[in-house]
Image 1: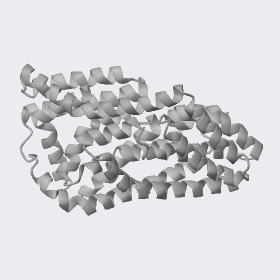
Image 2 (image 1 turned 180 degrees about the horizontal axis):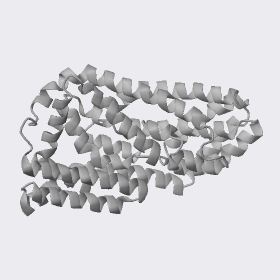
Image 3 (image 1 turned 180 degrees about the vertical axis):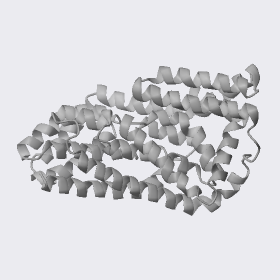
Image 4 (image 1 turned 30 degrees about the horizontal axis):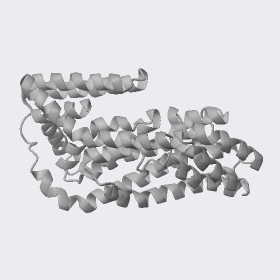
Length: 366
């Protein structure tokens, strides 16, 4: 709520739209570079800190950027949350997937990282190409919207000050999340401070700043409800021991398969479990204590078991409606879930296919 309110305040000053407009103008003729560049930044965030819900706060900025370039709102989600999820799935230093899964499997920290980095490079390339193709295909329909955004006016002294406040906020945000392990309380305080300072410096006054905050709260309400509902579903299934039953029922058939087929079979098993368990770290704690001993009995390497978990659970974050971050970003961007599914399903299928090929190669190499 506070991040949405803060960015609404910045938007009311006109600084954000004008700043993005100048950025796009400076990239005139090369504006398609924005998609891979922004995607690489968010992929790095996913690979390093499992970035997901933090992106909700950045949706207003991404919408202005995609709107100014004539792209549909879906592109704003595709250049942020999409690459972040791909990066998180195969980032060997991701503490919430790679690190915790290796700890449970009693493996060295960077064990099997060469395969993961290879899959990360290939899958991220697939995602960026798919996003660029979608953006180019749908851009003419959205071009009229981009032309209506006022971005050609000079920033002025107040605008430059507001832009400096926003940039400083992002710098503190990254430092706090990566090095100080900030949670939602600290991030909320940071965005509240940014909104108040931007409103006063931008000339909105106390009343205008408060009204912009309230409008931002209203815009973020659907996203907040999505997060709460998604977590409630997972909580109910966990408290009712439904998830344990699902894990047991899916793991038993794997014990009757050859090692290579069992490794491949773990991918859809992990994907199915991720629907009621949208937390990747929670899923690692739930499933790997069952699947790791099973892989030992089958003569399957533990690295392969961990990789199957990353492919199945990690990439499934792109699809599952119980993923609060996904539903919140889509709601904040005004993107219908079924439209997102039509865009992401082919790319998801390609990436899972590539992941399975990589898994088979990893098993063959021992």
